[in-house]
Image 1 (cartoon, rainbow, N blue to C red):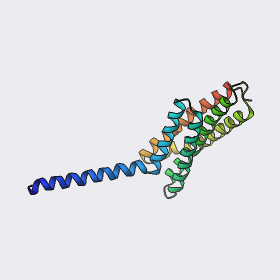
Image 2: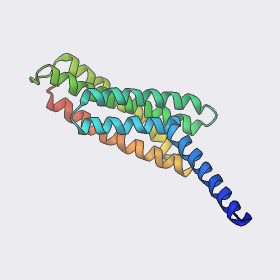
Image 3: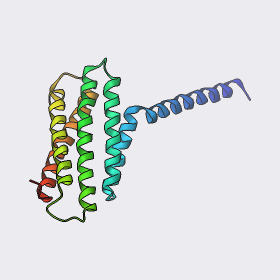
Image 4: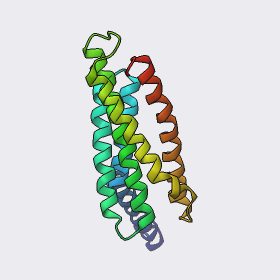
Length: 172
């Protein structure tokens, strides 16, 4: 084997190793895990599994709380994750309300447990909006602003979903 060919193989091996390390690090990071759990919850609710969705959203909320603590040195990132946690908690409570309603036989009006879960969902999403609102208007890095806007949009949508569930389940 000539030296030039050996050099190309060595360079290719180094490039692939760096790529593998980068991909592996991205897949295993806490933020990637939070996104994976959020996506898993969306998939579960799409498959009509509110219990699984609630479980995954609860775990995503825990990851958001952990990420907030990890970013104490960056106030904007810390605030982003502090706003994500109550949004994910709200979704967890909403999915749990769906599961409780189904387990109770789907009789209207819904039980106090279902309505209580929806009240918790409503309070949590309002907390998220309060935290995320100023962040979407602040001067932050573009990637952080994009994440904040996506979370704010999800929270705005979730307000409508929770209000609809409260009406549909005939909660006081």
